[in-house]
Amino acid sequence: MLRNPVVAVVDAQGTAGHLGPLLRERGYAVLHVREELPGGGDLLADVAAHRPVAVLAGAPGGAGLADLLAEGLGLPGNGTGPIAARAVGPLPGGEVGREETSAGDTFHVNTVSLDGLHHICDVWRAPGPPGADVWDPAGEVELLPRRGAEADRLVSAALAALDALRLRTGPAHSVFRRTPDGPRLLAVRPGIAGRLPLLARQALGAGQLEWTVDAYVGPEWFRMRAGRDYGTDR
Image 1 (cartoon, rainbow, N blue to C red):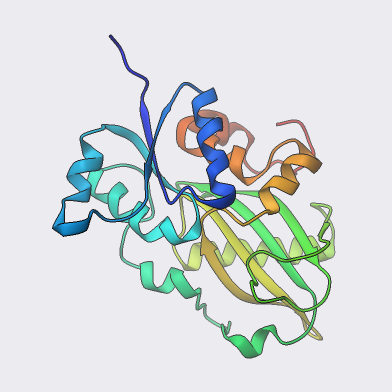
Image 2: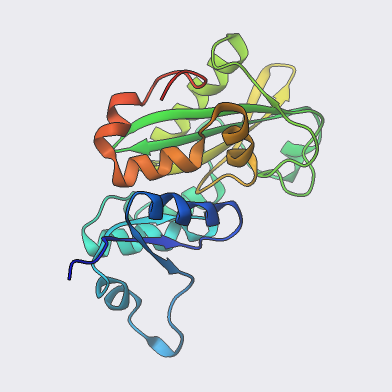
């Protein structure tokens, strides 16, 4: 009896938990990888036994392990070399630190990539300085039009950051702060971006969750549509 192909999702917590139903709708079984096996178990061998066709990060905390497993299984991913840099997002000309979050609106750019082809899922403005969680703004947020001077500048900077960090495959979330000189990059983090993909789904019909599933299990579909402005027909 044929079984459904398996997709391994590392750390499918929070909003990333919505990946499971989307994958099942496509006919895939989901293997939720939570953490390394206790007692020195071989996690790679354990995951390999399920013959996954893809390994992807859910919540951002799973990105490093997802890349490690994907590399070990010969599946698409970002490799393991620059994991430490991706965790904090240092970039040439950019700074990351608490002092950078003291004032000004924040902006959030959510993307999904496949082999270096990047798609802009949504761009948001969060009024006022960020709260305790810069990655998942509390309160009201505003979805910006895809085209316009402000969005274009944010998108250009986000794409440059993805390339600098060699984040070529999967979801990522770039955060900026407004300054007198324009938006300033705070950091980039791979993985599903808090509650914003759910708001994008409500506003646009699809967001980072849906595009992530496309990238991993519908790559031809992704390549055909990547780069289109959000709000248009997928």
